[in-house]
Image 1 (cartoon, rainbow over the protein chains, first blue to last red):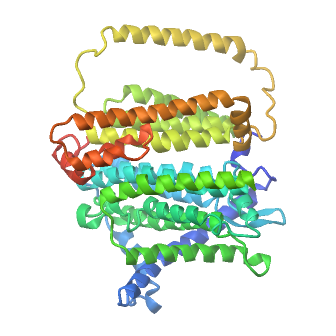
Image 2: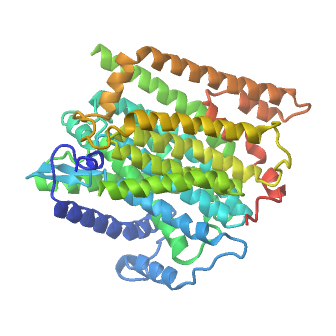
Image 3: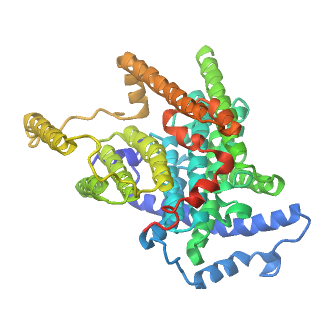
Length: 335
Length: 215
């Protein structure tokens, strides 16, 4: 049974029960954080805008997501008359699949007692993130196209152009780190940051990655696919009930995943003071700090125009990322 | 487990390939091609080539096919010519299919069948890793690798030149389009989103009747 090895751990064999337990724990923790993130975002934006934000449901408004989800689930899952039902249903499912799959490679800690504190450590490492990330495109595209609505189609088309444009810069931004650590595996990359976190030598790469991350997760200032002022809600205009809810959920999941990748690649992953069992906590704290940056930027910056977005992606970020790769390559070879 | 995965992926690949040809709506053709490519990636994984599988998904399913979907959804269908654009293309297609079948049969009969009863090739540790493939590309196959990268660069430049010439030939074109078209090293596959006149994005879509109501 060596055929499945590329997907499983190549370092050592873990029993199947450990793998199942790990997946359940990761899944449970992340899906417990996601609803809290929604209320945190609303409260933080409220504070940024000098108002309270949600504070009626539960203590400090913490039960707000429960109320929201309850409302969304109880709504009818309708679809427009000229929508294509199979594709319309498939639309919100694919991004969820992509997000959950991407969670697997985020490293929460080193190998301890024969158990790796991560979902999987694939040899292709970060390429896995891009591979499963590409599934999410189709969710947006199918959802937008099959809705049978002009706003949805425009939103989907915008997202296709935007995601492709920024994926190139995103990959190039990570190439510097990969060259410095000499490995694609996220676990190895975190181990290589024992001394200096890669954010110091790779600050350009970090900034480009985060900028591209804003675009990839459709967040302000790059939320063109769902620009509410022009496209109502973009590709999810025609969705209601929990299908709309899963698009919302996916947005937060993608933010978490991008933050996790950034924390592992640039911020030293699980590295931090204290005993070994604190590792996952450190990782989570770093991720949440980056999530805070996402929310902060949303509250601060207005949305870009579409041509500005494309110009920034192709004429600024891409050359800059290429230059960063070149300089890093020369430095790595010289030293 | 392997056998199950193989048959799922093989059936997916075959059904996807048939779907590309059989589907009337080009959008479904493209989606079938996407399904086909994903199934191929699974087959690569089963052949312990994780890197090729990832590259397949990232490059083809993730970038190229998204542009196909993009173009098909924008341009829509309905303008299919009722005659063969190339005279006698059905005959040629049949001939080519026959020759391809003969070729594949020869390959299968000569080497594939003999390996059936054996254990199969021994796969060294690290086979199909990014590191192994990188070593092969940059040492054993350096010249073909560099030649293909130059070829890709020429294709990229050529795509930009062709697009720029067509654009500047239009009388009274929007000067903004020319400006946006001129710059940026856009790879050939990525020229589609750029070539779209950004400032007037909603107009062509809103006026096209084939878009709003896919059926």
